[in-house]
Amino acid sequence: MIAIGEDSTIGAAFFGAARRYGAKAFLAVPANPARAYAAGGQEIGYAEAAAQVERLMRAYSAAGFGVGHRVGLLLENRPGHLLHKLAMNALGICCVPLNPDHRAGEMAYVIDHARIDLVVVVPGLEALLRAAMDESTQKPLAVRLEAFDGHDPAIPSPPVRAASTAPGPDTPASVLYTSGTTGRPKGCVLSHRYELAAGAWYATRGGLAAFGEGVERIYNPLPLFHVNASIFSFFCAMLKGNCQVQTDRFQTSRWWTEVRESRATVVHYLGVVVPMLLGQPESPGDRDHRVRFAIGAGVEPQRHAAFEARFGFPLIEIWGMTEMVRALIDNEAPRQVGTRAFGRAQPGVEVRVVDDADVDVPDGSDGEMIVRHSAATPRKDFFSGYLDDPAATETAWRGGWFHTGDIVNRSADGMLHFVDRRKNIIRRSGENIAAAEVEALLQAHPLVEQVAVLAAPDEIREEEVLACIVLREPAPGDVDAAVRTLFDHCNARLAYYKAPGWVWITDRIPTTATQKIQKHQLFPPGVDPRSLAGMRDLRSWKKRG
Image 1 (tube, one colour):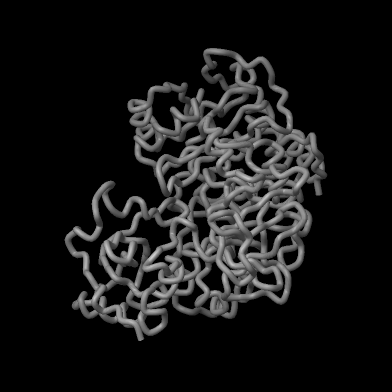
Image 2 (tube, rainbow, N blue to C red):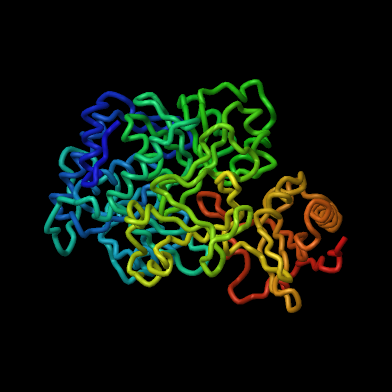
């Protein structure tokens, strides 16, 4: 494994890996005839990648890019994204991944907020970029990915040439934007030190998540504008001479084909992946793979054991976030399957569980998880801060601990169990209700394709439970009967106050490219959802006992 020190930088670590692992596979793309690139599949070795990165470095350097510049990458999930990132970081350029699923206004916000100097774009996304630039005040240079082909590519120069191309460990390597579930997205500034520390942490957790050297193939269907694929698994693979298998996106119908054909030994998932795979017809090929373990978060408790029994490998739950992705992990036997367990505090990731006043709550009680590296160096290997928002950064770090916004429950043995995001706690008549608990129960019902649970205002009880539901196709002929069935399903299994007081049947629930539900996009801003057509008031059905 490539050793990481306090002064390490991404470029030095990558070229060290290229010298050590040379001919071993570094990046792979599964074959997919429908894909616009690498339709027949692609594999790039460490030495070949180093040669390509050096060529890209010459192009960026000759144009005058270096420390202090920010370059946006609108390259989908192509391997070129990772090669350009490595070249840019080696020169001190900060990478700003752009989300190809954004609308023009959303992308314009990121371009302006990050003050991007240049955007590298694939042809299929040029129209989106033009539309975004029409709405932005920042007018970055733009260049096609193909402009870098050839021996000596020429790219446009920035208005001010960089004074240095020698980054340090604290130089920003990336600005990644949060999903913006409330308000505008924040830009998380991630340093060279942060990104390498995240990869080294993941690579050395051991136990059921032990990585070999030069033998693993990590299949990651998540997008490269996300911290999971572009930093967490990518640098884990690089530092141990392993290969990242980067597909374009998650597709239920292609998952097992790509996992088998890519010879994946590790796979990454999100909770939404599990019911989709379990929903496929059982097959003798369910265990025809080389996967040793899966890494992810959000598996519904009711499906956790069933998935492992059917497919033959553990779903190892982790906790991490863009601000700190040295993930906590439930990687030691015996695991607590089906309990939302995601590991215990460790040296380097200290944890407290606190109430609203930052007072520690007893084990067995729900509270917000706050974290730090250590008392001596609380912010070590965390994000550098929110871009141009020191007030938000300091608010998150109040009292010397980073406030995650995640509600957890720590058992007496120190195991941490995820409950919900703080903003997804519904406060009804003095009772705290985790939206995730109601969502998990509804999602397990055969009538439900997708569900989002959130708080609706209530003049008497402060808030009431609102369930937005997409019914599974073909939709039942009698929607009212389906609503009654689903209410009874919840009411029979949850305390009466947790059952939905409002139900809205819809055709679509908006999600991000990582399949994270965007609750803030369900209803128009300023509109009381209770007034919308099709909203069903079930409050009279809710009776104690």
